[in-house]
Length: 113
Length: 111
Image (cartoon, rainbow over all chains, first blue to last red; front, side, top):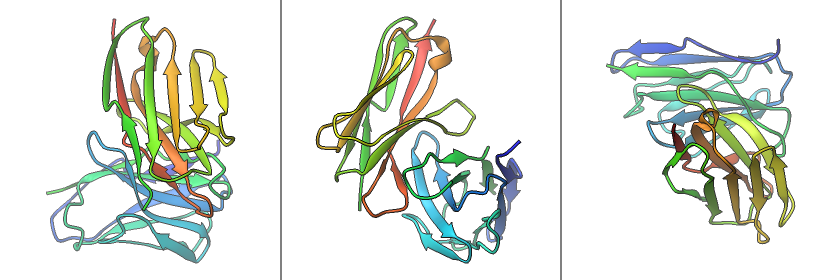
């Protein structure tokens, strides 16, 4: 089955630690996205990538970093510089540009203690 | 930057009643997409509208895109318990490669 996987589903970290969230897709999609969702809120774009080895900042990139070394993978690192990292993180992909639907992974719920 | 607002934020309806959520953008959109997120789940694509004034139907769901391509609505006829969830609109800018998601409308059904 084709799809997007995110691991782990739940993640706990101590304040001041960097943490990397995994996102893998086997849909052969060109574009990948990271969103943050806070309780009762919409989705806010952190970073996105249209092609391998290239990515752009979204609306709330501060305190986050990404890489796109392979088409299938788009990991997100939440650094200690992110002031309020506890949230639900969603990864998505699209076949190409914005005219296509976004396929979402199951999400990772990060709690920083 | 582009902003997309949705109203209402919450809606509680009796099962069988109709439901409507409205989406408004600060800028003209190239297209609008609608997603549904069940409690504890992830957003799932419902539909995309591209043309000015476009109307699309999926069974009990009717989607509209405004003439100016700055607003949209989702109407559900005769709600069922399976309709529970949060409905998001998401707008695409011309020349952009990303979507801006609305704030969402959370629908709860009273049996």
